[in-house]
Length: 462
Ligand SMILES: Cc1cc2nc3c(=O)[nH]c(=O)nc-3n(C[C@H](O)[C@H](O)[C@H](O)COP(=O)(O)OP(=O)(O)OC[C@H]3O[C@@H](n4cnc5c(N)ncnc54)[C@H](O)[C@@H]3O)c2cc1C
Image (cartoon, rainbow, N blue to C red; front, side, top):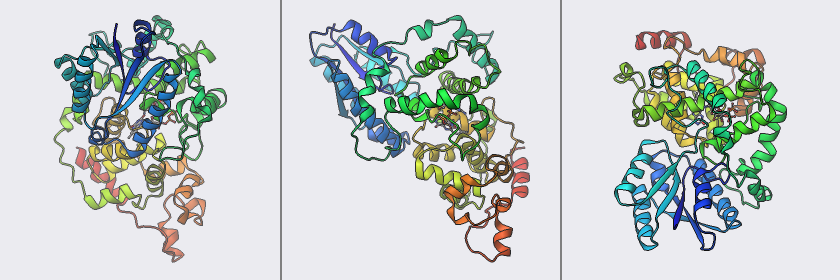
């Protein structure tokens, strides 16, 4: 059969069903061809950050070399928009008598529309699924619909994985991630995302240490932003360069009883991976989320005040709340933000400043290396209380209390706000009185007063 392989959000050779079927069904005697489209204009329309785009391009380049070793020619094609991808494929399939184009499906609305347009134009597309552990749409409640609460979803999800046993996992296909170990000694030049190693190097150097050493402490350290207590795997999962099923096999190889040990400390990391599955399922069932509708429809017509000056202060890390500002600077400087801080700054934007969560969602996408529509949307709607199983509207994080709890000595704050280095620990979380008493001029005034902002938010949401 003459088959074309189309890489999308799955630039990897391990656990890649489209690649697996391609290898099984195409003749090794003829040159095997694969394509990946670099669609910068389309990516910009989707608010993909420059650092995420750079990260993806590096993985695409690495995959060219890796596939060449198994006799597959991967061509990287500039196609500004999805329409250009379709035009290229239609012509290519016709010229080369392609009988099937193998690819892994993508969750998002525009991507699905593109695939439907491909089929409408006669491109013989065959899709597989590679972005989740349990196939989307399989974890359902007793009435056959999507769960609206995380915990019962998780329980049903676990049941499926235990039940299907290793049906899902047994299908992990070669070539394995080991092939990519050639990339370990990468001679890459410095680029925007180069502090994030390629997937194979990340797996060898970071993920393996995380699993061996840090996993047991994850539950205790995951909320402390000054400590590297989390895995840092999000850019790899978001870009599809590491498969979530592969990650689960690594976990189960270490601890075969993990799926039953839901109270164990080690489970708490898997719990987060299940949140990822939850949000992907939610988007699968509720495509309106891709268009940024509130999950809870009653919130759709909120008239957010959207004070521009306040929004700009939030973006620049100049709100006068040290933890919020340090977090926003972490995002700006590194392209990543700690989960606890994502919750704090998202709550601050929506509840203290009464700014539409969609502006925050967009800003995050434009700056995050791990920007992912489903998780980002889920996180923002959780914080804004408009989402599925979100926190109730009357739960409003106190940014000073959050700072005292999760950055008690101000270590994280001082890293990103060095101007506050000399502030004693007990004043670091809200240093304004100390600064005034000492006649210093080192930090912006708070743009809102916490107690007033809280009362405003309660009244506004009501
Ligand atoms: C407002 C907001 C926006 C967010 N935007 C994104 C985003 O664009 N992309 C993204 O991948 N995550 C997003 N998250 C979830 C979470 O903050 C990141 O996945 C996490 O900080 C990544 O760091 P890590 O890989 O070290 O996580 P770890 O703690 O090591 O967790 C492992 C993996 O579990 C998944 N995970 C962890 N927490 C969550 C969660 N709350 N929701 C869904 N999946 C989770 C991620 O894939 C993560 O990589 C957002 C959370 C909030 C509150």
